[in-house]
Image 1: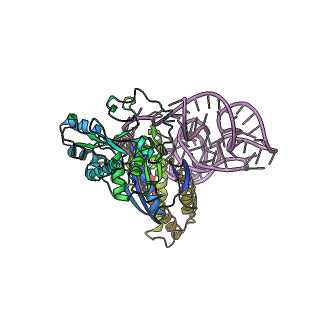
Image 2 (image 1 turned 120 degrees about the horizontal axis):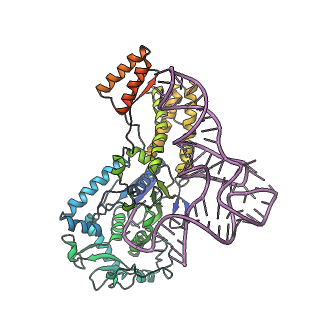
Image 3 (image 1 turned 90 degrees about the vertical axis):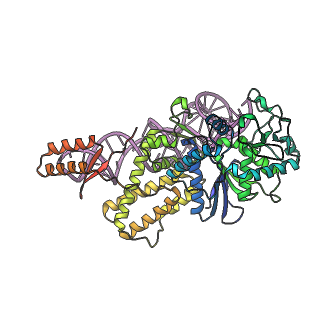
Length: 475
RNA sequence: GGCGGGGUAGCCAAGUGGUAAGGCACGGCUCUGCAAAAGCUGCAUUCGUCGGUUCGAUUCCGACCCUCGCCUCCA
């Protein structure tokens, strides 16, 4: 089999065939840096990372691009309120975002273009659209995209969202500043400068102003990946209007070769719910990544949970689920530790394992991670059985370990964190307990064990003597 | 109102026209002075409801119920 993905354009699972053999251009709509990103945002970015890693696993040379939106209404509002400069304000949240991104083991995209650094390309693209008669400057000095004119060129608006515009509800949701537009559905390419914008503006052929939201992605993606590229990802909410408008702008500029689309495969990730409800600050279920880290969970555990569910399925993110993820991951870590110990540093000469075949089959099927994890845990079970029976050779262990490492290049969980060293005081208590046990004073030994537990350290008596383990703090 | 997802054990979840993967939780066992940890093992006659097609449906068709999302800034 080969990789198959669900294309929003056709609403069906299609075989993935890149425009240029073995090379993949992939663009994912990134964050607007005006706040700390929440767990829902990261579901999409972790999904993009998973796909990027799987494409690499499948032998594709991937060029992964993710934009940073650093100029936008909410940003401008905050900048105005705080009195900080645009770069100072967005810089802070971008750094925070990337720190969180790293904590989730997401590989940095090959390029991270900023909207503010692409104003020249954005203006050029709008110019093309104006020259083609598809965009117009309105009385409010802003430049809008004309959907009627676009359709007049034989283009189809609404192909991605599959919307029937005649039957769409309109009404009070249309804001009052839309008077200037020729048609209600037209959207801004260039927003004319208003006093509230403060210092945030750029010169353009249409006067001072700033880019509209959708145009930055068209300009940046086509500038970096070319007018036609393979994959465009994002959250499901971006299907309309953001991605629909991106198609309109990009194909309206007609930069593509004849018969080529702007994007071949549109892939969207579903949103997540938190504790059964839509995330909302008022419900107290609004989690940023740092909130979860503060609760004692690791980025690794959160990543595991996020990649344990299919990207197109709605997913209920719960603290209970996170606890379950911790246990499941611990089992996996335990096996890897045992295998590593058995190999004694020997690396596998061959890592042909059924595991890899099953993993590839499942992932080829539109990234069926649930199926993948099913076979992985069956494999864990079998390895454990062999280990328990003492029938596993050093070579077998090395081969198994090698196979897992290949799988983990995609899942990106990495090695289990090293155990924390106990402080001297704790170690002294442990020695007292050992002494008590030696003299069969189990009452005293148990008292010390309780004392250690109260201090946050759990004892595990193994064949090689007692081990101390720090209790992870959980909510 | 339009469009699109879902409803499978306590929770998460895969899946197939031929009789239900996997994970968490839970029970039993091994180990242990007792625990813990780990391992082994058990755990849905049943897949939202009602009809239909079929030798046979959770899987196909129809109706209905429930639920989520998008149509507005939004991952």
